[in-house]
Length: 327
Image (cartoon, rainbow, N blue to C red; front, side, top):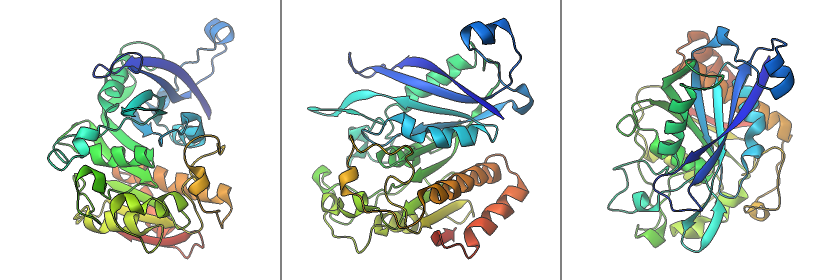
């Protein structure tokens, strides 16, 4: 399948210049026609046989460039999805300019948490999708009532915290890698607090047993975790009630915090905190992408074979699967 992408820019109305512009890269299944427009401008029409396209919005980790997740965007687009990654340089924390997924700190405070989304970039991204539905190669081809949020690290956290039907009715599910909802004690929470998730939509929570970034950040939460997966596991256990059979926990044996990133970039973020991987990185990414794709097919596209395949994939005696739970 031919996968193409194009770029757009969007304004974050709530942010001040110069930190009020998001740059999007939009991946989609394409159909080469040999037209002059393709030859001269590189503009390739969408493969309309798979339309209307459900949309994945992917939130990067802090100071993690969106190109680190292009491999995943291409694989998901190959499954017939439109995938949006983005770059936003902003001052989320006073005095700290960073490439950010957009974290609304006021919505993380004890008095405000749970009353709204924590993903400050999301309203601008949703407006940009509405414009794509009107103009360009994807005009009229998007299913804007079927949007999935995904992300890595802090981006994964805002994705799962913002995936509530009470916040945005067009959001239908979420997934995250290397993310949890432990509460920062500096915001006024008691130590060892796990904050609740909206728990109204399908969820896939993925973590790695060698996540050094999570393991070495436990002081932020007033606790020393027994292992790198403790807050991810506790988020699955304590932040959602479950009961619908559409919430999953997948812990990958030997994966670290940046196993989702390819190519790896050691110049930004906090990769110096990470533990080495103990399993082949390409195999970990392959399993990760397959699980995410099947999760979307099963619980957004409602394909029964995908549901069965997901259960078989994760419940099998696979040396890359450290733990798998569903509730």
